[in-house]
Length: 286
Image (tube, rainbow, N blue to C red; front, side, top):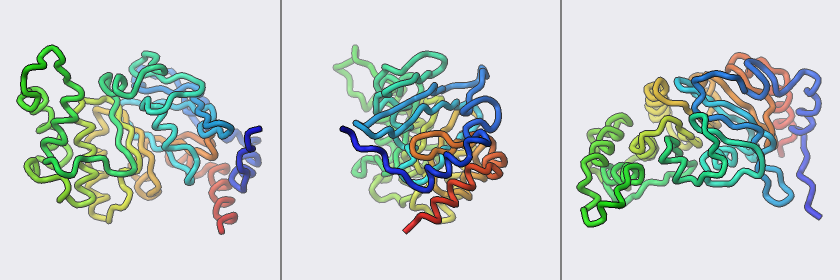
């Protein structure tokens, strides 16, 4: 028999606020609406690992021109949700739509080629390659030419142009020849964003891009996200709450795999269920 999921003060807080409609805050249930500017939509997405329900019926929409933050305590299911949206993990239930198409059964590479970019908690750059080569390889994955197998892929003008443009947009235009392993932590995070941009995505799934950054690096990254926002739909998983409430247009709060609240920063900040959940987590901490 599968072990029952661990309960705690956060779960009790969720139960306590059912009467105040914890999931529905504004603009539809669980963050859903019928807007035509939605680029990525999750409908009741679920992911199980044996007897553990890591993501439990989560629905949300990512709209062009907005930053949609997903917050919650460690183990809330945030990164697992991004993995399901990106196609790195198969959904156990529910539906994922990209540009209005059902991509639930699509692989991660296919979703990436269709316009979905992803960054990770840990930097995933190639440290021995230059900034340009990191970006060019990412662009090459997007602009594949299997019919031209006899040509040197590094000479592809389209991939090279996309790499230079992506590096420039991420603030690394002057570092193209620099070895990635010599970059600062903040610059490596910028390079990860550049590698995403090299694939010409319309949707960006960013997992803790501010992790480990100092104040100056954080400001540079936030400025970059503001610059990218108009042309993209951005999902931001982040633990820096000051940064989240500064930049997010909408926030989804997750607790033990479920959506506790979804709304504007002001609505989420004032939500009784969110306050109760985080207060309970603090009181129950060792």
